[in-house]
Image (cartoon, rainbow, N blue to C red):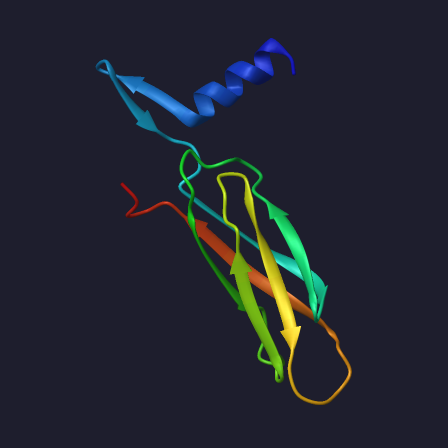
Length: 107
């Protein structure tokens, strides 16, 4: 990583005003993961890491997720894992999953 890239990264995360440091970096992140096959997992990596572990919420991107169950686990400052499961009869299909991660309200 070049020096200018390192400096940009530092300034993107912090701003110093009146000898106080304020976080400007990632407090929220969101995205959509496309075509996750049922009965599988997918690891998601945040574009910009968080300073603390965020709360993560996942949901199906549309209303066609009948017989599918969605879960999110192992959140870290750099990402989390999505699992899509199928219950009931029928062939497993791919699902689109939307997500949001936030540190708002975290101490």
